[in-house]
Length: 221
Image (spheres, rainbow, N blue to C red):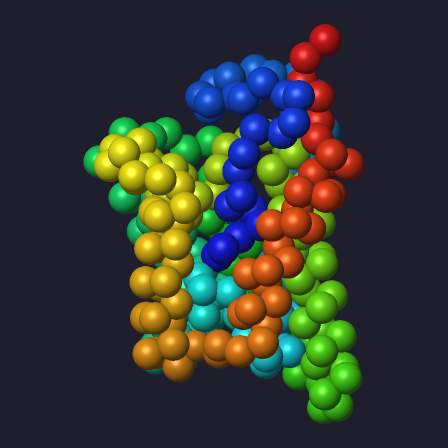
């Protein structure tokens, strides 16, 4: 997903926790684990709202939707399978997943399928717009909670940072190339592209940045 959960930069004023062992040894682990899981469940719920809005998805979710439309798999199952496959690409990049990485690959897919099971697409356009806007805002809250827990990047963001390190290319170039590729594949497979795609692309970064200070868990001292 151009995921809020995949926007993993060290929080302002906090030292990075690069290794899985360092992430677990850092302070306030119980609080961080609870925040991690709550953020991932909320992320899946927010994805469900955006899907039900039917007004456009971010590149990775358009890809997930396109694959789900062409297979017998549920949307959430596609999210999980894609996350696991992306994690396999970490092996040649010599990266180690953290607790948050593995949780990201599994929990979000379960949460989004649970949401889709109980939330239907609303009829009126105003309600669909409300679903879309609420989904983007909640996605940012969920992403800030996940990132602030400092328990490892999401699979897709780890792929991006690994490629940046191995190729020497810029973050902007690698991320844009990846997202344009999955967006094109998702569109070709029937994923929903629309105003929601544009809104997400423009809003998610600033929203996560604004909310992140509220969710940063200080691990030292």
